Length: 192
View 1 (tube, rainbow, N blue to C red):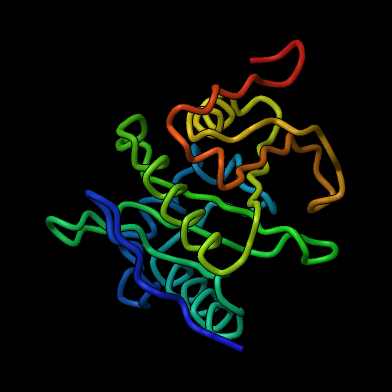
View 2: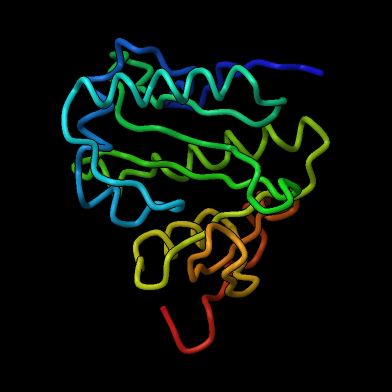
């Protein structure tokens, strides 16, 4: 069993394991209600740096127990080392069979393509570990996230309550979906 969270890189980003000293930067993400309101499982807005340090300690401990390719990463700008968000590749409940790919970014950095870079780096990491598909789960009404996952090449596969007991839209990404020539994904019927 391989247990570790590797460092992953894109053109502009480095995805690396979280450190407790990332608390201040992480609070700029997870202390923002515009970020936490859409998370699954549900997560309260982190109220202060001490609470963020405690949460990071929990995430670091959790990541140490995960089997590759699963993990939790801090997302940082490679050029200046500034932490701008977090990323996950985690087993989805209840069966832990499906892997969820996800990202959370500072709202002032939305719309710059960082979610796409992060998603593709995590998907490539998973596919290199004999995973054949990854999933994103999006709350209905989160049009920004559902647009982003479709722009990432993910395809809508349905809605479910099986993950986290929440109504969620499910999107899937397979190896062939990373092909730039693949057709774009449509959204759920009757929705954007």
